[in-house]
Length: 304
Image (cartoon, rainbow, N blue to C red; front, top):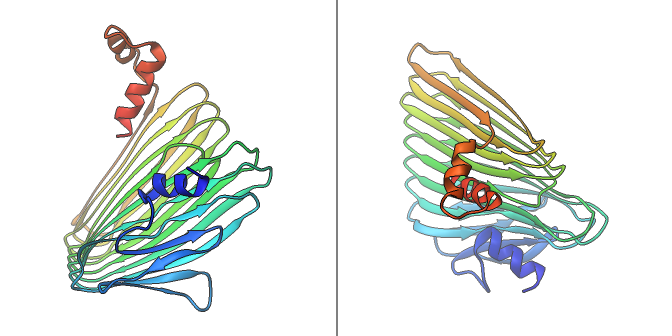
């Protein structure tokens, strides 16, 4: 399996030509595209990127939009806009993989905007990975802007578990009446890697809700930073949670912020950072695992 096939399979589960709608971005260019009756993908004319129009009668289709880089010295910037009509139900599988066997850095910067109509239900899955044996950096910087209409739901599941030297992940959302935003991220860093996450959510509509959860592991000499800002501007509920495990010389900073601008806003933030408990390792070692195997098992369960 070559680097292209390997990255596509890891970040999006694609083997061969995917069924349904898809847009594959490869080394800052177009690697393939197809629209369907309910999901129409068109290229932008004024800048790199695509517009994805998801029609109201879409029910449970999946749209694939992975981006991959397989060479050194590639510096990609793309703008993707999603327009989801009222009542649509769709899963969007994104993700980015950077393979670098050279000395020059390669990076992907993706700017995604979501405009979600009333009562629509969107699931967005994004996986990031870096591979290759070169000394060149593997950099991925995603930015996401979200507007949720009345009664709509957006669930984001983001994963970065290996190989990315530097990432800054920014997400900003505006929630309308009864809208619901769920973001669950998993990150693991090692070596000299750096990962930063920034969430900002303005809860403007009555009965809207936001639930942000970050789980991360910092190994080696890597460092991470988690920033979450929840603004309760109406009768709403908001919850921000950061759980992190530090190993060796890893460092994690968590900066949760909640602001209630309405007496009916209910906001909670939680942060927990620490090492793996020794008794957990001892318990697994009594079952026949080595210390390293016990640590790997605990991390796997934590990031599941």
